[in-house]
Length: 587
Image (cartoon, one colour):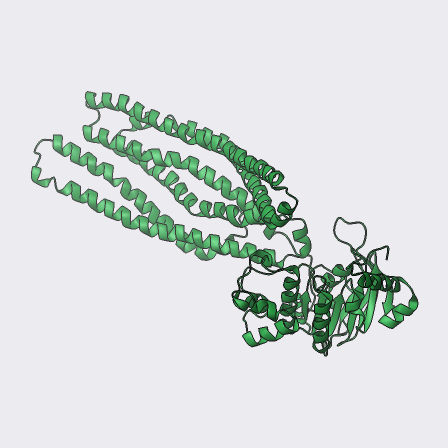
């Protein structure tokens, strides 16, 4: 158990005084509750006793009122100390989980479903909060109220009647032990079913355009219904166990009350028990009903909490494959690639093999090749999204692993293939890299990306709120907004990963004209399927199946009459015929 809650100790230890004080206050509440039956006992016996003084009756209601006020005040205090602290734990744990997820490499997300991660951040964390909030409260009530009530009943009232009333108690313990493991197993199934359902919904909403365009709404709804029914079924399996256990415990409590009525009434008739003691005994049995019920609640809540924290621990135990050695800062930005080879996990065929190239500071490199040849992989390794082997990528004469990941990424501005935009304003999307928007700077980079006029035509201009992933912009508009975002960062190394594929030839030419000035003093790496985008760069690297097949200037590559020349001739023909195509292996 200590190992299971190892991450939570960083929160619990600083908050232990709050928890201890809250538990102490809860004990005070329970103790005050146990006074009321004693007051009722004294009141009942005084009514039937000799020398009864009616003028003293006011004392008992006042005592009951004072006890009630003490209970109310103490309950407020423990709620603040325990429930509020459990809410702080929920906040702290969610932050820690999110922080951990941001440190994991891209490889981790290749093997995880979004729905699973969402379930961890919602249902699982909520289950942990319940264990350290209401769970603690019910546990204290179950232990303290049970022990103190039994002691008072046995010592102050009647030991024989107490032992008879407690006969059903071991049955409750056996029921709880039997169903505890079943509850934990079924709750795990509930969490997994919820993860699958969340992932199904997220995928449907994300791909709604594709679903509608292929007229697959009914098929998608059927898949959703299947996941939804599986979620319902797993919850019903849990509810059946949960629904049987608690009424059964309540039934046992009622049997205890019936035993008290039968044997206790007989003791009163025989004069072995006063009427006041009998009334107090019934009150204590009623008080004892809650902690007996709480045992079931505690087991359920704690089992859920343990199951959930184990699922969360799986993420917190995950280690990023990315690592760096030192805290060096690059003195210059000469980039050298030496025999770079890379394999994705569970993929036997290398994405890159034996790649070597050099890009001097301020120079430019174009990358051309068919789909799947390793262009984006090369960019991902340079930006440290995946772990590279030592001695393969150098910046400023030092291994890239000698620099902190943050330092490398601060140097680079990337326009990726998938131009993800956030659900906020266009201005904030462009200014994303710096966290604050300078309207003048935003206008400048938007003009360079050839997007100013189209943004100005939107109802809110640069203040227009974008839908999820920028759904209210076209593909070309999203690309140019992403280009503006990279330029706003003002990086020393600029990487365009097929960033102009969704724009027309005229717009591409205007953007490239602006880029001629932007690339002065910067190191530029441009990935593209179009030779028109690359031909003015210092050198062009042609890849095929992860290997470097040609390298040189546009003129040098044309003179080779190899793959680059064939691609150029094919694209020239397509432009003549008005066809927009991509590089293929057949080129």
